[in-house]
Image (cartoon, rainbow, N blue to C red; front, side):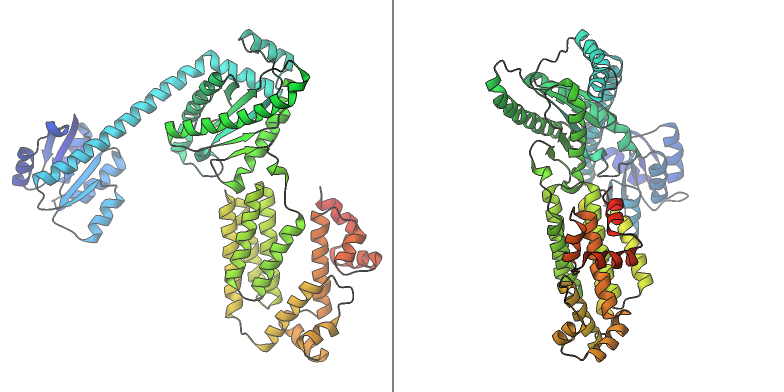
Length: 552
């Protein structure tokens, strides 16, 4: 039976509620009644109860003050308010203090009984969850003391090469665990809720070890059924699987055994995901390492499993990331992302927010499709943000403000826990710049300057590109163009052309393996020697020195 305290300053109301409710039938016992919040606080200090039924308007300490006290000191106590006040402020404060129900007087016995019935169901559910957690805690503590812990440590030593492999194999052999399979691989399971995809609070961090123990039990049981290997714990919320295939007797069977083992590894990971979700309602991601043919090579499989799991950043949670699938190795070429960024630049120059967002969405889709790890995602988005900033600067936006917001955006991108949030940050910065551009005076000079900047962006690779080409395209004289361009951008035509070419050269030096003379040709210099002179003048380093530093 759950204990109830009734609080109301009207004795007739208390008597009516006491006599017209079937307390025992609803699962409750009326522990007492008080005429105001002051008495109620004194009562619960001596006799804690499960439920408090209280009016709001009472002398000394009213119902809301009582609710606040209970919220701060007895948060597990369920509070039900009945009151003649329907104002929003009262209901809002009641929500703030986690009041379970807010009923308006007059309250009928039937209405209150229905509320108590719902409350009993909630309390029953909470009690079951607490009992389940207590049972898990007890089981977990027992596990900490038994041989499974020793086995997990020995398996970890074998995989991580923390001890000499022969010693680890001997120790495992004494436990009845031997390895005579054809192929092996390591899988790493991580509960998404406790991973770096999220920011778990202290309570969740405390329960992570218990939940991981459940995942361990499920994994160990399924592996035993399938005779596919062993599970062991590593850290608070990660489970490792040491998977092994059957042994082949004839050389001709090797390929078939290997392919079946890879398929079985994925199937067991999917089954573990499903069973964990059934048991805990939590998603688990799995990184499957490369297949090896010796226990001596397990560390390499573990490394690739960690690398696979790191790609969850761009794919999100609940994934199975298999390093043997081949997908992870097929990254887009540098030029593919360059094309998308060109679309972004064109959209920003045209002040077209919709197209700019579409370009960033295309970039996100491409990165998600390739399951890029975090550092590559952040690099691509940082480049996109800087490109947007450069266009804003060339268009006449305040350089100090632009740079400050740009660096803040790049910093926020690096700190995001998932790719979707990082892309959202890049979008916010792009929209900010577009809004600033849209508020500028759209004078003829600005339009011509923007068209000129766009022309340079599209034709910078032409060695013969010159001032006459741009003026011919725009239909203006060279003298007039030179004046308005300098006023609009703060640079001369040649300054901007050179800076554009050097920026493209730096990108190519940093992200491709092209030779210096090839890069010179791609950015509009037919003479590699002259390209090198200009590059060093602009950057303080030769192209070779810059590439060596950036390609580390």
